[in-house]
Amino acid sequence: MKIKKANFLLSSPNLKLCPQTSLCEFALLGRSNVGKSTFINTLCNNKSLAKTSNTPGKTRLINLFEIETTSNPFIIADLPGYGFAKVSKLEQAQWQKKLEEYLLKRENLISCVQFIDARHEIQKNDFQMHEWLKINGIDNFVILSKCDYISRNDISKRISEIKKYFGVDALPFSSKNRFYVDDVLNYFENLCNNS
Image (spheres, rainbow, N blue to C red):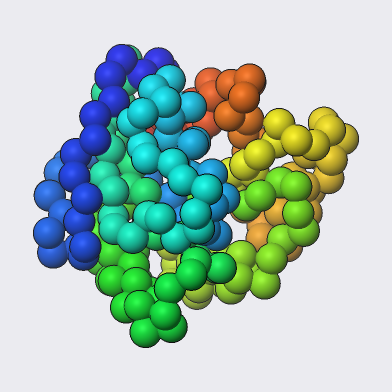
């Protein structure tokens, strides 16, 4: 599968205002500043498609992107990050409520993509997020971001850790050299075909 075109659809504060589509949808989850926006830009080969920032917590809305491909078009939903965003606990609680509603009730959501920074050990809130997905029966897999910064041996170790502790597939990803773009697109395609 190859991407022909990628468009930003809209930013929505909640599920109610998200447009209804018949396309497969993938929701991106991860700690603040884990590289979700960079992933979208790298995957679509468009540096300005999703806004990136060095400031944790920049994404505060559900950002939807339509990806047109040579086979199955799909939607990517970039969701607010969890972790060390510099916002109040009240605002974090409001985000969490809206995200849970989206993840539990979005009808065409095929799978959640949990991003984990390959440079570090799995964090406590990564475990918590995975456990929540598991308890609620939401299909998910992991993308190991920032693999540019570690060795192939360390990437293999991280993949083994994810499979051991989470029991789901883990795909490496590099925004600098695009080595793993085709693998990720093929994974998306297989999930769409089997949905």
